[in-house]
Length: 94
Image (tube, rainbow, N blue to C red):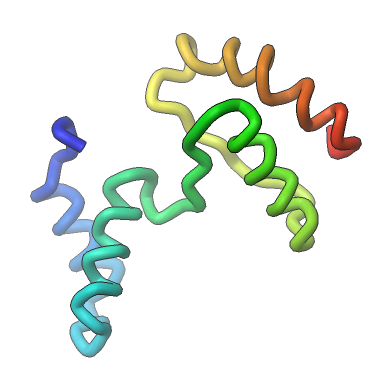
């Protein structure tokens, strides 16, 4: 988390949660961290098995699709393609 632009994150949180001052402090801290890690999205971080399991869980809860983001798409997508997508195909959701 050392490369996070915390002033930018705080500005984003303040804009999107301007009326959330009544939220518990620990919830606001969690929101701040999630915004820093991916604009508040559902974090899928881990081994190929863990990421595939997270996507399978989303599918099982009723999601028909999702948007993924990568820190460095060009460098990271081939690994995702080669390691995670086959696991999803094996699970029957790709």
